[in-house]
Image 1 (tube, one colour):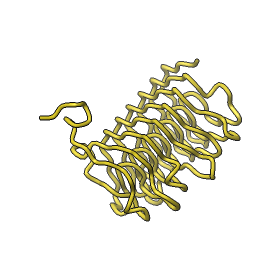
Image 2 (image 1 turned 90 degrees about the horizontal axis):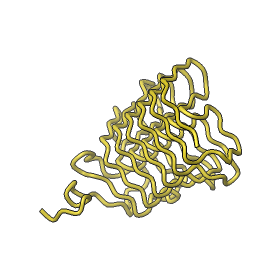
Image 3 (image 1 turned 30 degrees about the vertical axis):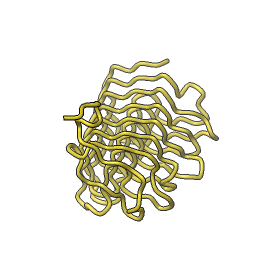
Image 4 (image 1 turned 30 degrees about the horizontal axis):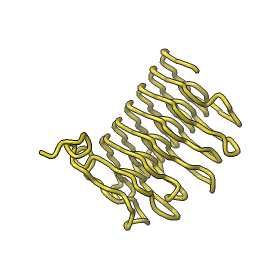
Length: 212
């Protein structure tokens, strides 16, 4: 269990609140980052800048620091995730990129790739913003159906609106499954290339269990 309270600033690749480059990391669990993470390079995350592990878990992690980069692959938990299960993670910090291209910015993961990059049971409550490929949970989920049972209640803003969405900015194959978002906070419904996504928009009162 690791807790970081310090702000982190870097101009290089692989910048994370807990791990810059996480490779086959058994200890990628029960971590908390409270400091702001600022980067001028690729792969920036509240917990992991770059997360690679052959079916290893990234779970029970919390980020409350603001995560920002002038480059791409930026996430509240993972900047980039490959061959890993991201489960039960929470981001409440702002996540942003000023990169004027495919920025891949996500409340949980900026870019989730491979056939084993799962994102499940995660919550984003932070504002997410970038140029394009911007999502409340993932900027891009290459296999969209591997994003499931997630909730986004944060605002999502993208300059290119066609690649900006409440759950995944872009899904190359498949669509997120059984995900919810607060449509009063984030009116952007569908991710590009998966407009029939089985995801659900709810009013704030519905998400907190109030009928009126």
